[in-house]
Length: 257
Image (cartoon, rainbow, N blue to C red):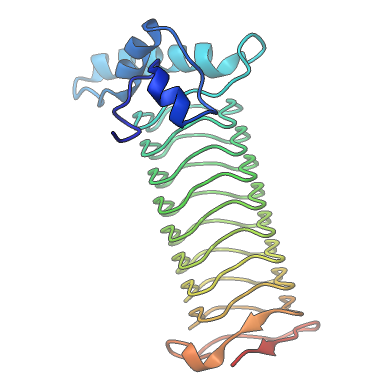
């Protein structure tokens, strides 16, 4: 049985997912409301927004009495204002967070696999250790976000804004970062094997010990980037280093293969 169809209060669910709590049946109704699609009627849509936010405030706003995560998989929370919310360790698998405002949200170790975060705002959010693998992060705003050891495997991050983001030891294997802004981001020890960085801006980016083997860097900008101890495999480049700028001091490249 898939995670999005197991009841929120199911003992089987909690047994297979030990981080999820055993919650009473009334929370199942909350989950149904959170998973409901938006109504086309403007007035009803506004009522839904207030209702969903009220439920989230109850489940996430105060973690003092129940400091345990819960199952919010496949919920529809697009365009909501959820700034500063605490989703740490919560299961948001397959959730729709399109254009949601999650600035300064606590999402440490949250399960966000297959989540839609298209054009969402997560400035200054903490996603340390979060699982965002195979998620849609197209044009997401992650300025100054904490993404240390986050799993971003095979994510669609085209045109994402990652200025000054902390991505130390993050997994970006096969991620699509075409046209992304990684200016002054910290990718120390990160793995970008097979990632597509064509047209990306890595000006002033820290790439110390970063694995760029098989990465695509056609048209990327790397002025004043620090690539010391990094791995860059030229023989498997699609388009080679066409248009790549490696100007400035402190650029060291370890060619592999």
